[in-house]
Image 1 (cartoon, one colour):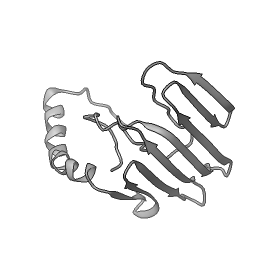
Image 2 (tube, one colour):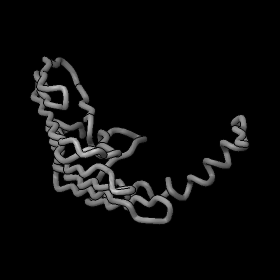
Image 3 (cartoon, rainbow, N blue to C red):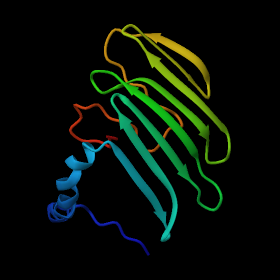
Image 4 (tube, rainbow, N blue to C red):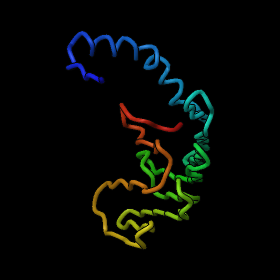
Length: 152
């Protein structure tokens, strides 16, 4: 039988203490120009996420195969002055082999995108964030974000 314990202050504090070593090295990871993550399941390496940043362009290679299935995704992300994506291209295949060809672009007043449902656009008057349908598991976060998963 599986039991879920109610969270307590002691358990929360213990979790934070366990996370502290990771949090201490986080700034050095965020400032890196490349990041390479291996995905391990059942003791086996089943894939990777590789992100490389040069200036305002980040390329991401995401490939996971577990029991012969998994996504293969390639992303190119151009960020603007605030660190948010202004162009985003996603190509590859989903877990079950469907083709992925998604894109996003934004100017000061207009955003346009293409995803699995087709093309669309919107006029924008303030900062907007696009979230991809079939991208890697950890998209870039704005430079101003104090918490979040962020590539270099």
